[in-house]
Image (tube, rainbow, N blue to C red):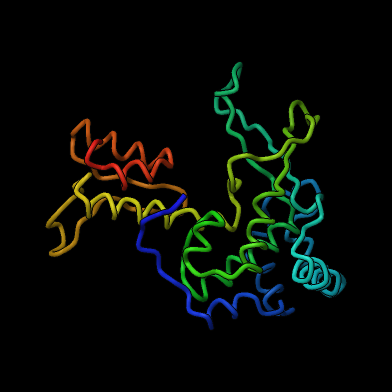
Length: 254
């Protein structure tokens, strides 16, 4: 699969900077940048525990980041396991749709992913999601391996009436609340820009001179601006279903 999109490219210096050995200071900054009051994952510890016990735990955290993750590029299974708790949306829930699933990620995984996401922000801002996209943007093999290890080894158990189900693997990429989740936004942004370029959608024009608005992206929401036209909505649905190639390569038939 190829994506004919205008990806911003890392230069060699930026790519190498991403893969420098982890420093104790950046690990500490990652711990302190997380919400310490969030519910703990399967490990039973939230980030408050790591802050309060920093002097005791910091060397173990450094060994995790350097000796295990930096050198091997692998995560222990327990680090990337999580609980999914079901929060009722109504007073007397009877169906699965009556619950809001919340993924409780382990604190160790939060630290690993936060360190990686903070490094990405330093060189390129918010960028893309799959190994193909990372490759096309110039990320080197080691970095792509780290990101794909975080994504591909995710597992979870659902908490029902205080007990957990059997563990299962994720098949749809990043979890809710994952520090790496901003990686997915750039491809959607570029695909919508490409759709405007080849006149599959129009967006809002002349709101600001010289600019066309098709969407606004926030931390966990996206607003689309479309013409009230069945064909235009259909084209956007192709993009949202990740059928980007159909829109770009065969747009004349859509």
